[in-house]
Amino acid sequence: MHSLLEAEQFVSVASILLDAAAAIKGSSAPILLLAAPSLAGALSLAPIEAALLDSGLPYRRRFRLEAPEDGAWVHIQGPGNDAGPSFRAGPPQLTIAGEVVEGLHGHGGDVHRGPLTTVAQAHALAQAIAPKSQRLKRMRPWLISGNWLHSALDTTYDPVFTALRDILVEEGTVSVVALPEVVDPDLSATPWIEPLALEAISARWPTLDLEGRARSLSHLMRPVLASSTPSTARMEELGWHRVVAPSWKSDLASQITRSARMWKERGASAAAGELVDSLLRSGQAPSFEPQD
Image 1: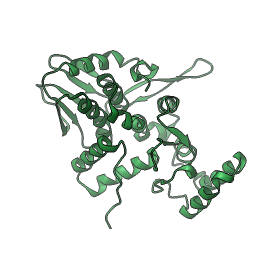
Image 2: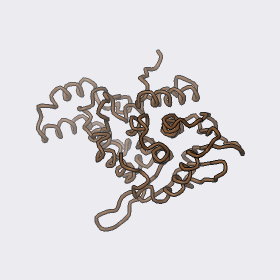
Image 3: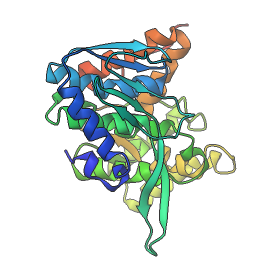
Image 4: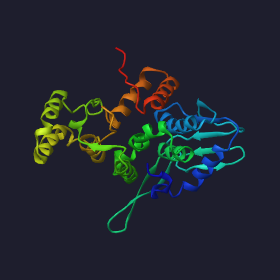
């Protein structure tokens, strides 16, 4: 896997996260992992927990908003905080908050900026703690899940999402496929797509040439083209750019959608804990169907 902290999107946070990783590895006290019991909070804690588990480092997980004054801890901030990470040593106390960073450079040298989420930073920190962690390797596709949840994709193109996804593709962690190539997609976030129509197109997909595939997929997506939501950027991801790992039947967006439903059926802390536990076990979200 590529070293995330060497990627240009992490330049502004690399030194802080490297210092924190070194202090955490050298700490004799258990590390308290703290986040709100939200989907983003769970997705941020999971990679750090994976790294600590595979490193044999003691820790405790707590879903709550405030960090204590004393002790060693990593505190995940909510989406309203874009101040970036901060760190104090002795004992290690790391606060991870989102930050707007340079995502990609255009052909004319112009800079495209986007959110470096707490999820992405947590993956980078975890890799610095345990670069050979097998749990973290299984969880690697979730690096971009924070950007998928972020509102940037609902308003405009997110260059950080694209850059991090390209890293995952380049290292062989994921592939990007069209919706008909996903074995088990969740269509609740795309109500304009007729399941039977998708099933028919998926069955014919291997026999279609590029023009036929483009025409078929455009037909599936046509009902939403005149709508203001989802954004063009998110619509393209939902139709043409589904992210899947080699062993996955459901793509990343589908697993995030299914995970989000747990918060409607369970208490927030229970849902957050169940998601983290599932990611630690398998690198995938739990299969979940709402109760009737």
